[in-house]
Image (tube, rainbow, N blue to C red; front, side, top):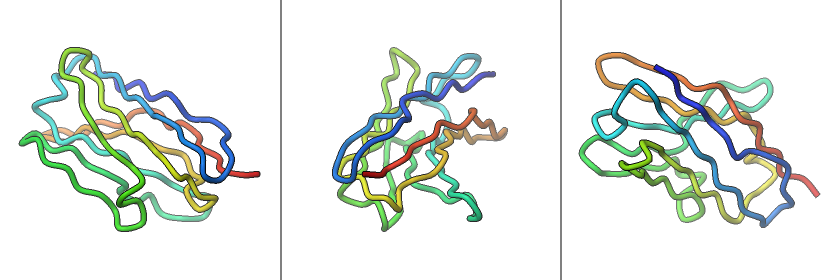
Length: 113
């Protein structure tokens, strides 16, 4: 099983980025897919989740700015991040959770002018 995260980078405040997490070895639609982030010195926190039932949930800090989506054909989950703030700076990780729990490698998002 492999989760390949990509799409991070440096962006100015107010900008946008789209993260991707491509899966191999599992069928994403049967898993609860989540995006987490971890800032330096902080604990890893849940940002957004796309459940196997097709529902979504977001951390209060990103509601209205971030959107999680899933492409079953590409077996990929996305995180569209708009109106980015400096406090969104972190390493972002994708996670697939079912009976087993899988993590992708992180992708760095830096929001700075």
